Image (cartoon, rainbow over all chains, first blue to last red; front, top):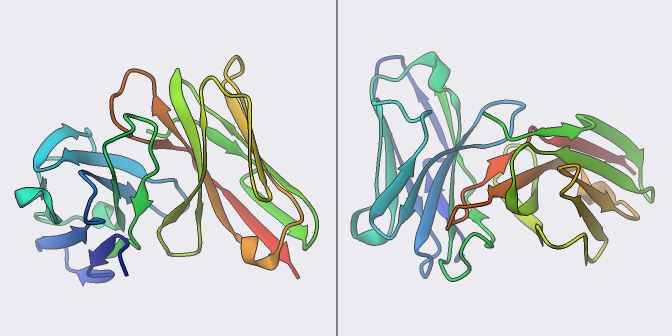
Length: 116
Length: 113
């Protein structure tokens, strides 16, 4: 399967614990995005990477959140000191960078986080 | 915050009927895209329409865009039970050099066999 993969698919944690999610984009894609989706809502943009550089972060990404993309390949999203409000589906998407803003983003299956 | 609103929030139809979903947005856009999401899964890209286009077709899908009204519609013709899903419009704002997307709240479509 050459699509976007995310791991784990589900995560249950207790409030105050740290969690880390991984995203493996499509191999030739330079751009990688993280979104968060709560129940009944559309996805909301969190952050964007062009290769290994993190070029934009949403205000939704508080200082408890950190994302990395070492070597411009896979990406990790870490949430420290989780809160119940962090419960959501975390979606990763990737795209090639040859079409400017006119591009299709390919989404992974998401990681569903539940904070108890 | 969400870019805009989708209407209706939920739509229930019989197989073979057409389904129309509407999307409104607030800012100037570079393009508008429609995605489908099956329950609890990732999103699948359906179609992209540029700001200088008014209508686009792909198979059983027809998308229209009215930039003067900041609105778009998605028509699915001859619907099938497999079309049951949530449908989201997403916009790429004018002035961005990459594809950061702002999504609507979505329309839940149920197609009864």
